[in-house]
Structure formats: C-alpha cells, structure tokens
Length: 427
Image (cartoon, rainbow, N blue to C red; front, side, top):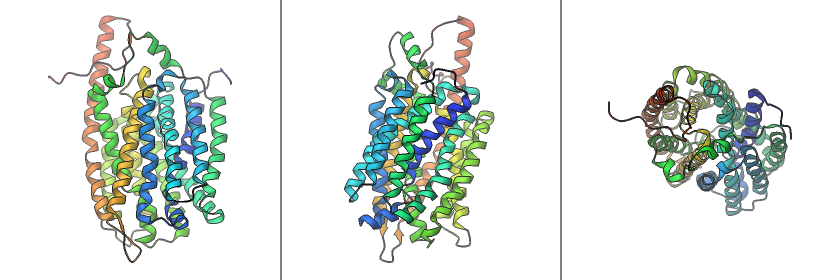
C-alpha cells in the first residue's frame, strides 16, 4: 500500500465511493420493498421491519464500536467493516422469507453502521475545518449518486433478473470499491498519537456527560426518526395510494437524486459561510412543506417526481447542516467514538421510526396503505424540533472555540483536550 501523500480531492472521492456502496446497500431495499414483498409473500405494511432491522443492528454496532474503534488505524477498521457489509449484502440475495431477509439485513447493519461513522471520521480528521462543510457535502453526495444511478439501476436489474439480483450486484461492486479504498487511502493514525498524549483516555461516560454531545445526539435522533418514519414506505405509497406505475418508480429516485446532488454540493459551502442553523432551518421549513403536501394533502395536479425532488432537497440541506456542525463537537482523539455513538443513536432512531410506521400503517382492502397522514404529521413534528437545537449547538461551539482561542493566547503552547470546556450558562 502506498505511503505517498494523498490529495484532499482523492480522499473525498475514495470515501465517497465507499459511502456510495454503503448507502446503496441500504437505500435500494426500500424502493425494492414491493418487489420482495410480493416475491416472499410479505405484507407491504411490514416493509418498515426490513429497514428497521438494518438500522437497529447498526445502532448496536455503533454502541459496541464506540468502545474500541479509536484504538485502530481508521483505514484498517473501515476495510474490515466494508468487507463484512459485502458478505452480508450477498446473503440478502439468498433470503427465503421475511425472517431470513431480516437476518441478512441485521448482519449488514452490524458492519454498515461502523463503516459510516469511520468514513465521516476520516473526512473530519483529514480535511481542515475551513473546508469541512464542502467536503461533507461532497461525501454525502454519494447518497444522491446512489439515488440517481444506483436505485434506478437496482430497480431495472430487479425487473430483468428478479429482486435477488441487485443484492449480488451491489456486493460485487462493493468488493471492488473496498480494494480501491484499502490500497489508495492513506493510513489515518493521528487520533492514536493524540490519544497517547492524554493523561487519561476519554471514556463513554465522560463523553456523554458533555452537554454539546447530548444535544447533538438528540438532534441526530430527531432527524433520523423524522425521516425514517416515512422513507421506507415511499415506494409502496406512491405505487399503491397515488397509483404511480412500477415501471416509472426509478424515475422519481433519479430526479430526486439529481436535485439532492446539486443541493449537497451547494449546501456545504453555504454552511461554511452562513452557519449550520440558517441552512438547516431552511431545510426544515421545506421539509415540513413537502411532507404535508406529499403525504397529508396531496394535490393530484402535482407531478410525483417534482414532489420527491422537493423532499430530497429539504433533506439534503438539513443533513449537511447538522452533520457538519456535529463534526466540530469532538476532537480527533475521540472522533470515531463520538461518531460511532452518534451513528448508533441515529440508527436506533431510524429503526424506531421504521417500526413505528409499520405499527401505524395498515393494508386496506383496496390495496392502499392506510395511516400515511398520521405518519407524516409525526415526521413534521420532529422536523420542527431540529432548528432550535442547531442554533443552541452552533452558539455553544462558537463560544467554546472563542474561549479556547483566548486561553491559548494567554497560556501559550499546551496540551490538547478531547472536549474543550463548555461555555458557562451564566452571562
């Protein structure tokens, strides 16, 4: 493996490729839901259980990973996680019923969850703060590419070769991407050096006592639960309730992915310039608007691809804002631990959202999904709670950084701390 310096652009491309496979493995399952539900004899209202099984397992993996991931070179840890994901994805194509498919998705979540937090940790460690919003937006663009290219292709592959074929295809692609990342990513060991310089390592309990960490995790839970109470059911909803043809489902993910890609590329620099709160608040307002229009009071003159584009744009703005902001909470020494636990919180919230939607939704006699308006209103409520948290965390981090800068000027060179002192609540 090469030890030569790797450019920021190459790092972003390689991590983006890893994230593309990781995200595609997850997001393709939801639009394929009606296909494998029919093939395995599963009720459409139970599709949320499949998505929830992945995210619940990813949450457990995040909790466990938070205890040891910071002890290893991040590149090696990422390679192990992605290889496990590749094998689990292939196993999904061998499922014979609801239980075996859920088991395969549990295994995928156990490896995919840590892969996400490790990927974000690598970007945060190698890319300076001044350009991190742009970098996060670019890496998160993998979601858009997965939607634009991956999901429509997976739907087409399923049409041609059956619902199992996309699982095998993504597993093969994942193996190639993992090899590329392992051979070309630089070793990422800076956090090991920083950890050795500390008098004592920061434990999970100490991390969780930090107020900025607490608010960040609560915000992650709201964002993910608010999204995944809806997302696993979109494909079934547009086909069964809005009578959108199965042959055209790939189009809504294609156009939604394009607008999401553009949004993520533009949102990152805007977060760097205007701050996470302003960008995230705009995303939250748009999210409430398009959720209400799409799932509570849908106007039938509105093209479904246009509705989905608005939904994806809103999610992109909000997600770049909160991911960039929370990446500033920890230091390098505990970054993978922080992000692994954040991933655990987010995945568990996603699982709860998906499971809750499956409890609320029912298969009506006419083939439609009943209860989508109740699910949508819960999503709207959670979305409205995010901007105030963005504002609080942004102000606290700004005050913390200013205090640390003043202390550095007054004290001169000194050791770093894993979590800088929190700003006082007294004025």
